[in-house]
Length: 308
Image (tube, rainbow, N blue to C red; front, side, top):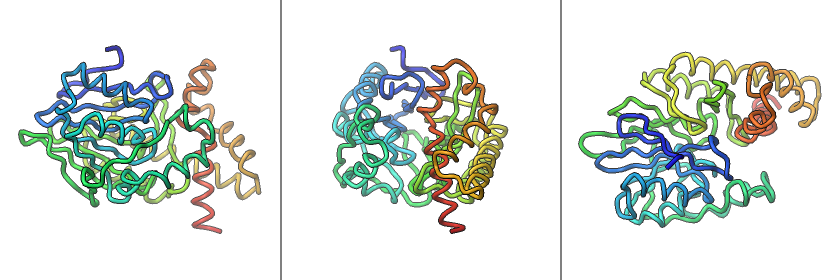
């Protein structure tokens, strides 16, 4: 299938084709003795992911584990559907996100407030997962991939309070979720992901420092793909966070409302990303993947909390 890329080490990147777009959200299959899917993509992507797994030889009874880095709908919206397709799979999530996978109504209501009618086309509806199938992780945890291989979970908040990073003991791959930002492979751009309500600069920087300390061989971005320049990419992640926070702080101190703050930050950061000055389609994709409005709103929410 044209949406599967072999990354070595029995790891396969699956383009979940979020909202029909290529290159927006990746899921990853670790085809170990106990096959494990990292990130499901959205609910509307679940059939795409199921078919990709089938083409890799993983049938309805073969998937051992589904792990999500956090419960935002572009990463975990398909959990309920995938759990239904693969009835033997255990679902693994940080303890701060577990109840929302079992009972998604609050999460869906707040998502609908943010996205309105776009919600259905972008994400679809997160279906509930039976509570007994969910394994809630504490600040660290290990997922058995079989044959002595483990996927080790490390609590990494800042982007979201239910966010983890995951390290594969066999490959040294680190699944970064959104904690290191959003990467666009076509242009090599990296932009922070700082949505409301959980963004917090200190914990976000601490999570990046933790990722550096883990010494991974490769970063696997949910948006999007593998990156081997680990150290410089994580340094850039931290730098991008600081730039966006500084600019948003400046807009706030000048008394700008949200719309003006977003316009100012978008304009001042535009030159940092070749995607934003490339063709219109690439710029549009980057904005869909990582909206400036969501980033600025998240930073303002945090600033209101720490310096009212």
